[in-house]
Amino acid sequence: MHRITLLGRPGCHLCDDAREVIAKVAGELGVPWEEIDIDSSPELLEKYWEMIPVTLVDGVQHDFWRVSEDRLRAALSS
Image (cartoon, rainbow, N blue to C red; front, side, top):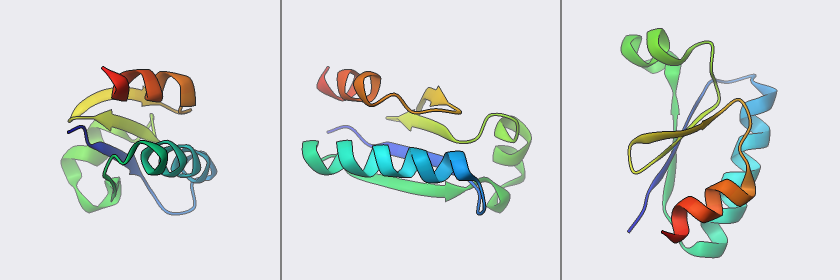
């Protein structure tokens, strides 16, 4: 079973857009997902602060800045 993780932060409009796409695709495919605030981890903040939102699929970076619904579906279908 796949798992999606959204790395973002409050007040990020791109994170809001990513959340909508992820919620839609995950809901349709029955894939669990979680959201992590990068401000909660110094390591995440250092690694991803210029790239948020970042989407991970099974712990591996999949997208950043924008989430492509088609690319996300394809990754979850493999």
